[in-house]
Image (cartoon, each protein chain N blue to C red):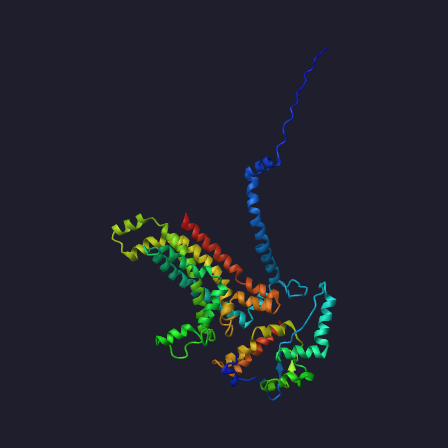
Length: 148
Length: 313
């Protein structure tokens, strides 16, 4: 059932700044345990799912763009034409960065993400703390984590 | 011909396995350890082993999937530099102080009420235990609906009674309201434990003491102050001790209602330890967070047990 709210909401891209637009996403990985008894069939399944364009396309189409990876080459994927509201996702892959960019991904970056430092910075800025102080707080917290 | 004495050996029947077993089980030196050993094995596996692992992790740089090394108390020192941890430390004392304080006052009041001659006394006593019996995660889900920013029945009632301005407080989205919400739910859940345990203490107070006090002209407040409260001190001490430990280590209510937010304002040691230790994989730091108050709590336990013993003898 389509709710009335659906007509009044939409997707939007992360706002751009003076240094361009920078977006991130939660990358998903598929792995096989070293101790797996069925490593070969598992590899075969991954090759089947991700290695053949027709299977992979079906996988993305059946997920209604939810499974669309942020790859440059997939920014014109047919799934984005299935709903007008997917238009905002079109160039998503171009400015995509992993968490912590330009630093390499690490447990420190993960701690910064999981500690919600950026959302808290924004929450501070809209609940009485000046924007400058909120940014200085977030910078300080991140520096402490990176130094540790 | 000398006739030597001939010993007659009579074959004694070898006792059956069953009788030997029952003989062994009759000995206290065997029976005691047999009864205790299952509990001991469980304690060793589920309490002692994880506890000593946590102690080791807290002084190491353990990270999931990587070899770890000993780093002393560096985790404990570094934690204090984190704003989130200092906030958590403060939250834990505010949460525990407010919740345990309210549970003591309301628990005594409820126990006194339940000690009166009421209709359907047994049913009421059973019903009072419900919040304690229901799985916390489930009952807290109900509370999360009641505090929902759009569908809050609390706000609906407040608006209907005219004591709130629309749209009403955002219970889980603003820091002071969120702390109030988690404290309220903790009181709601922990109150039966206080009430029922204190009720058991109240029932044990001899009626003659009240009669003697009444004969000496003591009113209800004097009777409560000079008879009930001094005789409840022992039970109250134990209940406060248990509740302080449980409340400091609270996890379910905060995790289900707020995940520690907004802005870390409701994080407690257990929820922050989960965030750092499990979600981020920094097991060493996570263990240090959960063990931070262990020495202080040990002292509290020791002092309180000493107090209770003094009351008892």
